[in-house]
Amino acid sequence: MTSLAGRHAIVTAGPTIEAIDPVRFLSNRSSGRQGYAIAEALADLGASVTLVSGPTCLDAPSGVTRLDVESARDMLAAVVAKLPADIFIAVAAVADWRPARAADRKSDKAGQTTLQLVENPDILRHVAGLEQPRRPGLVIGFAAETHDVLDRARAKRLRKGCDWIVANDVSGDAMGGNENAAILITSETETAWPRASKSRIAEQLAVAVSRHLAKA
Ligand code: CTP
Ligand code: CA
Image 1: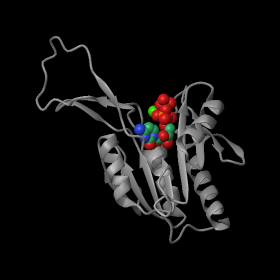
Image 2: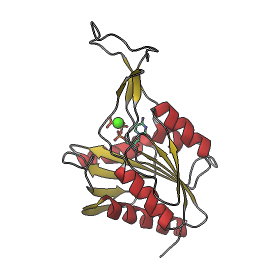
Image 3: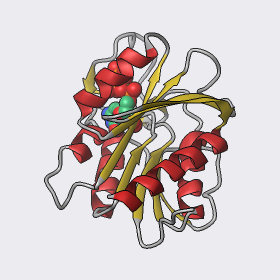
Image 4: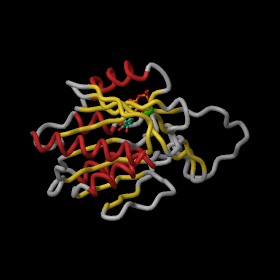
């Protein structure tokens, strides 16, 4: 078994939340389980792991340094502050949009039926696009899709500029559930991992990462 001793990995996990006002926010159904399991699997192989996490109900895996963030912009800043890294794995379900303006005070519900949104920064694309030596040697994204899973994931890998992408079908209960089925897409190979626990998927990914870095 190859080891990740001496390697630094940054993993994003969980949802982000985007304030509408001090009591309301926009978010999504991510539980954080897959990202936490990946952080744990990398640490089990000896990596030093920084887990940048949106709000979840989970405890940090032992041996992993967790940084808590709320919004996509906070998540991006925390990731950039923790570079350099050998490995970056974006597992977070980052909110794609945030309200154009967050109110300082709770707004009255009356008359508030339209939200103006702006797009959030793309953390994976940002990290994948960094110049060497800032760019981690291996940048991995996830593609959560409900349809045309493989085609959309292949296109997403190219669009984001990441090295690998893990495609997963979230049309069932993958978001929030304990299991996942995934396909690891690299520039050379596509490997299907049958439906299994999120920890099993995480172990397979950590082993693939350690084998790849051992060869590099
Ligand atoms: N991601 C990110 N920052 C964002 C949006 C996504 O880092 N603002 C990362 C996710 O963590 C994941 C990958 O990009 O690793 C793909 O996320 P996904 O939501 O599937 O892709 P999007 O580019 O947001 O496209 P869409 O939601 O429209 O399918
Ligand atoms: Ca998205």
